[in-house]
Image (cartoon, rainbow, N blue to C red):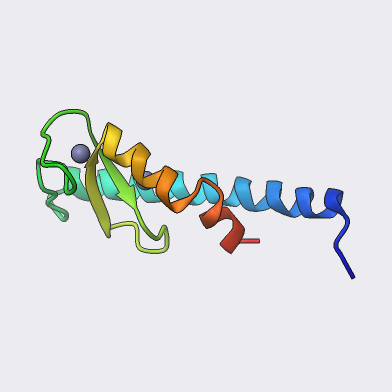
Length: 92
Ligand SMILES: [Zn+2]
Ligand SMILES: [Zn+2]
């Protein structure tokens, strides 16, 4: 039996909410770890080597200290490549 679209949407929105909360927690945990010297991150993009506009990317929010340093453009390209909803879909 096919799931009603509105039920799917509701589950999707709940997963999206959880995803955003997890993402925020992971970013905070990583920031605190860097501040406290528990986590040392490279000062260049893991993809192109750029040293400007660096951001942290989490492959898995269950492991907040496992993050990859990417510059802004590489970070966005990576998210386009993995698909904007793939992580959310896994949480549904
Ligand atoms: Zn880059
Ligand atoms: Zn990311």
